[in-house]
Image: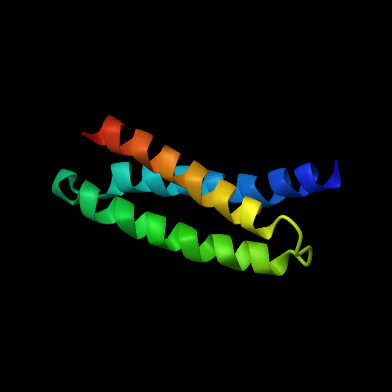
Length: 85
């Protein structure tokens, strides 16, 4: 049960930041720059994912947490891409 709790606690902030990044791109970017800035957000999310997961001192489940963080962020940014299209 602790592994699932750790997964939720370490993945949710990354997903929230992906959502915030997508909203900021939609609000602050020129429409011609949407598809330039969304990959930048994904790059920041990937780096942030590794920082968060390396700060968690629990090595078991590392790959699952990283995969969940990045996959969820990609889904959020894909939906944002469809909305901004």
